[in-house]
Length: 511
Image 1 (cartoon, rainbow, N blue to C red):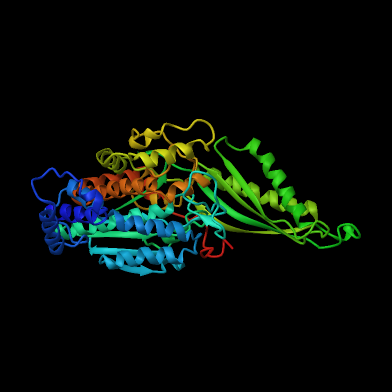
Image 2: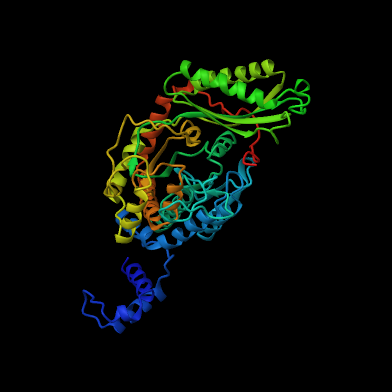
């Protein structure tokens, strides 16, 4: 590992201005030119991407990821700049595929009927440990990497949920584990799953439905956030769809009696669904946007569309709420003299926690530690914190690792849920955003383009890699994870049925 350390030092020295080098004080009795000579010789012997040494320990694996981080920071920032929305992440997916192929992974692209989905594998046989990576952006939140609102002109989307660092960090972990497997001659398979369209497109659901996870022993993932934590909680099951009303166009002033407003149908549905909120469990969430409301006020709209999400901690309750929403749509059409049809766009299970795997990952996160800001990052964080609602936590909390919380259930949804009901799965959040920053905000996009997010990404990459090593080295941990999965999902009686039914991937849902 001394060659790697010296090679890393060379990179730092090459990037250091000459005037600064003249004033450097090294804690070794070597003249500056002798140091350069030694480093250059070492660099010639060992490339920065060389395999790890035999009998690599977990601390050495952490050092390896740290030494390689610049390449993955570059990938993450490129994907941040691409800002491609769900099922359209052509450049983002290709970039990750190319990096994995370069590192010796066998890449299968276009899986599950999705052009941007892929699986990259190294090794053979069991255990098969999988790592998930996302890369889709959100529409409507383009933002420069500055601590005040500054949309990027001409850009329609932004990484407001941090999927650019998710994909790149997960790839860094998978590649590091691959090098560790080569160095230690570890048997088994490491897989990277490139999973598109998490934001409402349910990309992983199609991959689960296609059987791509059926032979996997354990799955690992992470997500951007404002804290470092592993949770034993769940998420909300989610179902989404577009309700399309069809009416009759007419002159809104000269012949209103001849028209039947599709927008009236949408608004009537919205009114009835809003009344439903009083009569559903408190943990239920329903939200919508009217995506099409007509062309001009003086034309009775012949077509209108509303895009709905419904969520619940229980997918059984969710299905009942969704059924009531469908009836509201039918009633709205009947009452306004219009017709309605709908398309289910996405549907995801609630995440099924796995305590043995979560505890192993938490221990590794504690070992890795959190994110410490430098002076420049502190200035950025302080300015951005002033734009947040309420009083955000102190920026020092980014350096902390939160206690393992057995009762924490999130209020968001993720298609990781379907994977977790198929394979033992665990994940973490890492502090890629200034503390107090909400997901899906311009502030999250801004943080994502800075070194703050990249530091959090490295924390996640190290934690996932160490947890993968545990799973390879400890067959009992894999067995415990499988037993926990069987217990939580009800044993052999459980049968997976996707909430999206048998529909094909909604590749145009962002159109």
